[in-house]
Length: 242
Image (tube, rainbow, N blue to C red; front, top):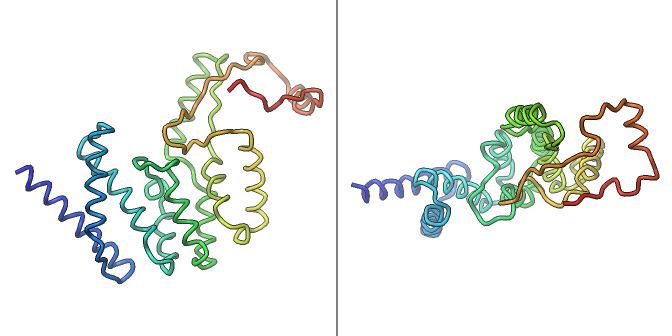
């Protein structure tokens, strides 16, 4: 029975792949055996090495194969590719199970490959959705940060709520597609993230650190803040023990 169910899943994967490529490109894919073999090794590796359940491994394998299949599509399908990916960024653009350096590595490769073949309307659609993107868990992150502040204000958790995705993706899109406002935003984000040595999309890296501030719990006026930020005698503003 178990063997029959497993074979049924394999046949489902074959049918989904064939249907996806035929409906999107109008061509028949004769490389099924490569995708099936890769999916089988990928599926088994997730269970053995990462301890995922078969259901979790199946969903992770599907997400990776969809992005990999998109990457293998012809460049002439650029508009369809971007319309699918950026219609729901949280759902379609991230994968966490491959050996890529970042969870958006596949998205970057796809963007680099297809961006030159997309029309201007589609490029504008991409840029608009990139700029307007907010992480799905942004509200929960805010709640956790507020809760941590109430419990211990002396330990400041500095979390980035917006800008990480925009910084990563705007640097992939060629400058010729960015208007003046987009270029200014890109410049500001480059300056914001210039001193950080990691990305929140790096696989397996710590995303948050505790920072003890010497001015925590002190009431500082706006004028005093301005004096601190503009004080030219402070030469190590960007230094950190991390």
